[in-house]
Length: 270
Picture 1 (tube, one colour):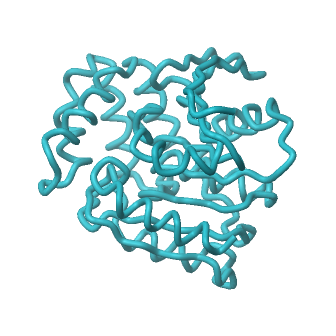
Picture 2 (cartoon, rainbow, N blue to C red):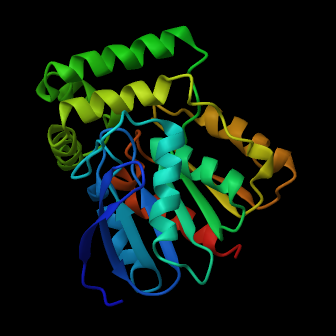
C-alpha cells in the first residue's frame, strides 16, 4: 500500500460499524486510542513509521466516526479488534500499539493470541471495576457526558495534558473530546468500569513489550506501569521495557520524539 491515506468502514458481527484509516507499507502496525480519543491521536506517528509499516488506526465503537448497536464492553472491544484483524487475512504477526483504553484491549488480545510481534503500551490502563471510588468517578463522568460533551471537555483536557505542554496540544485534545457522541462517550466510560472489565492473564504475554509513561501523567502514573512490568510474562519476559517521556496522559501528542524513541527501542528487540 502507498503512503496515501485510505479510509473505510468495517462491520463487525456485533453490529458495530468501525471507521478505519490505513497508510504506509510493510508489516502491520495497529494503533488503538484511549477514552475520548480518535484515530487523530496517533497522527504524529505516521510520518515516522509509515515508510516501514502498514499503519492501521480505527475508532472504537462509540468513539469518533464509529457506531455501535449493543452497549459496548471491554470483551466486545477485544472481539472488534479480532474482527478487524481477521478481515485482513494476515500472513504475518501484527504489532499492537494501544493508548490507555487501547492498551487494555491490546493486552487482552495478546493474552489470548500470542502470535503478535510486539506490544506498545502508552499510558497503560488496568481494570478498576473492584475499586468503588473509581467506578463512581467513571460513571459520574459518563452521566455528565450525557448532558453534553461541552460540559466535560475542559476538565478532561486539564486532567490529560501536562501544564508544561503547549496550547496546541490542548487544542487538539479539546477538539477530539468535542467530536465525541455523548452517548458513545458515556457508554465507553461505563464499559471501562463494568464488572466485565477484568485484568487479562498478564503472565501469558511473551512478546517484546514497551510501557511508555508520562512523567506528569495523573491518569496512568508510573507506579501502574512498574507493576505491569512485573506482571507481564510473570516477570520472566526479559523483553519488557519501561520508558518515561515528558508528558501528561497524551504522550504521543505531548512528546512525540520521546514516544518514537521508546517504540524504536522495542522494535530493536524483534
